[in-house]
Every structure is written in C-alpha cells, then in structure tokens.
View (tube, rainbow, N blue to C red):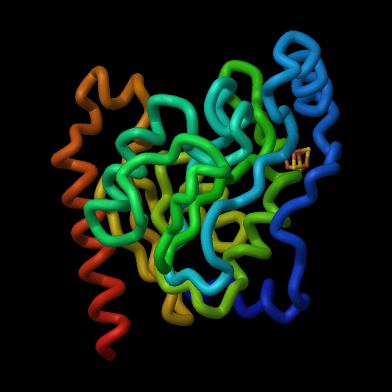
Length: 226
Ligand code: SF4
C-alpha cells in the first residue's frame, strides 16, 4: 500500500498548528476552565517542537495537564517527558537529557516532537472526533518531504498517523516495537507510550524504550547512507 503522503503534499503546505484553533468545542471549553483555575498555564493548542526539516517525528497522544498544556512544549513538565527526552539525548536527537521549559535552550537534532491532538483533553482521553479534527495538522507535518520515520507512542498516536495518511488501519496493527513500511520512503515504528502508568507498571521499561530508539537511530543511519 502506498503512503498518503504524496496526496497530502499535493495539497500544498498546510499549517502545522493554529494557536487560536477552537474547532473542538469540548476541548476549548475545557482549556478555558483550566485557564481560569491556573492562569499561569498556557492552555492553548500546543505547537510541535523541533526542526521543519527533521527526518524523525515522534508522535504522542495529547498535551498533559501539568506538562505540555502548562509549558507549551510537547512532553515538557510532566513525567512522560523525563524518559522521552533522556532517550532523545542518549541517541543523539537532543542537545540535553531534559526538557524543562520553552526557554531552556534545548535543541532537537533531526527530530521533531508533536502530539496527535494539540489540545489538552479531559482525563487524557480525546474523543475520536477530536482526533479526526486535529488530523489536518498532523497530516501537514507528515507531508514534510524530509521526513523518513515516524515513532508513534501508543495506539492512539499510531492510528492517528495512519488516518492522517489515509492508510488502512488493519494493514498496520499496533504493537510495541513493531515496524511498518508505509511506502514513499516513510516508516512507522511503534512503542508503548512513555506515560507514568506504563513505566510504573513496567509495561514499558527504560531498556524496552532504548531498544526501540536504537532501531530508530539505526534505520535513519542506514537511510542516510543509502
Ligand atoms: S484539538 Fe486540534 S482541532 Fe481540536 S481545537 Fe485543538 S488544535 Fe483545534
């Protein structure tokens, strides 16, 4: 099956992000409610972090309440980001092993981090319609011609990537450490999400996550040498 990336790219350069998007009424209302309670939190759609020309795109689920929703950078300020940025640094994709704030000077190398849903959902659970609404931003990122590998953190992100590319979900089942060839030089690798729940229960250990990142780094190195 051929990646839908060409179709997406053919539509021209679409916006990755709109700081004022309010297409999901439930999420916009929730952001306003959280902002009233926590005026110091950003409470806006969270933009991707990293370079436009990156070959690696890491896709998470959605901003966390005290993490990306507060700080304005994906996976920054909450537990999930601790392991993710440590791993990005270990494998050469980040200039430092932690992401603390938007102005902390951290730089990503050949990598970008984003979420399938750009606004904080109640209970960390976006509705299917909200994932679908936000798909156009993800599709715009996936259409970037430099992109070679997408690392999906969790099944929701995995399916959001496939839907944004117009691919059949049943042809690419999610599994931890699965690798899928999507065509047009684009690969999709899977990992369990690095959430506190998954790491506390040891569904995802640091070693398991490192093995996925080793495969990611090896794949990009091989692609670069080809
Ligand atoms: S989740 Fe996406 S589509 Fe929905 S309001 Fe936020 S930015 Fe807009």
